[in-house]
Length: 473
Image 1 (spheres, helix red, strand yellow):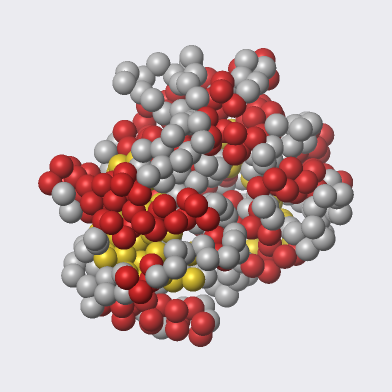
Image 2 (cartoon, helix red, strand yellow):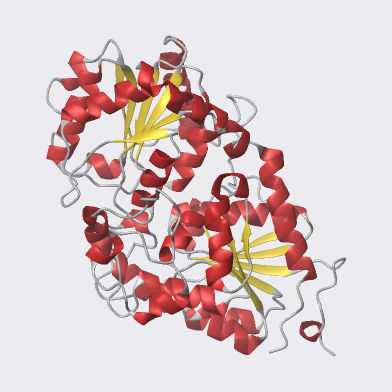
């Protein structure tokens, strides 16, 4: 009887392969889970393309983690050097998915020649369940999204029935969700934008359906204390175990001198000096992620709203936002706000900024990782959906949880006014009617920033991996 024909021995280390989607927001959570499993003595094969692996922070990697490079196959329409969503505009993402699908053969060859017990995979590899079933390898679908998003995605049977074919179909709460006073759904402009990044032959929702159907169980980046109703629902509608993995909160380095390199250290020193001169919780931190692209008109309207708020701020403009068009920041803006505002171009150490006592709120694109970081320090949220992936759902969820306020926008085209930007910032940061938002966000530190609570779910995940029967396929 072979190793794959008996139950995994709880005392014997496992060999676990990790295969994330080609986006930094996916790679980092997969690496975080890898580090935890390696601490438990398991051998990890972390599989991605060369450029993505080189981007990872590897200085503190466990020796039990082996980085496996699979060169990304060439695909017509995909720039030669592109290996992740950060390298391309949203309308090129379908070509990246086609290239990712071509990794099936080299990944299969790797799995055939290695003694892998488990593979932990992402949503995009719709072909992988078929491969691992043939090879007799157990599989886990690790969704970096929360249970609320996964409930909205729905059960595979509903996804594959074709009931939702147009962007408009995703702007209403689906029939299988019947929570009272519930309005977590996409706005039309968010789904129209997301449509641009879906591959014609296999939609993202079909990929989700295959991942859910083909795995042994699902793990989701959430916590039952926060997401209990949705977690219970997905366990019911998926017809298989869906386990919380916790929020995977990042750990703030112990000292200011532990930055990965000199440039990061210098960046933080400059930002910290500026923040040190501001009153406690007086600064709103503004960052729209590394992959959100706004038009120049939208950036200008946002800038006017920030200026009209009259509050202190740090506004981080990523390389993609800066490269969008000339004069992305209104002429004279920085001069007019120089006594209370700082426009920072390029990368910024977001976790360190959010942890600083001068920061009281966060105007965010609603990426789940960014929300987790902010609420880990109790920062109230000004919600401005980046109109990609699950960001719109997160905006509605956090608004409903009353830990932030969503900036009102036109449902169809996403337009907004500087007046509502200013009003939203002021309400979240200083006005009396926003006090409940600030209190609720502060209380969320006990969930989002609680390392012992969140590590408990990782421990339970490890126990399930160790005790689950080996595949007999």
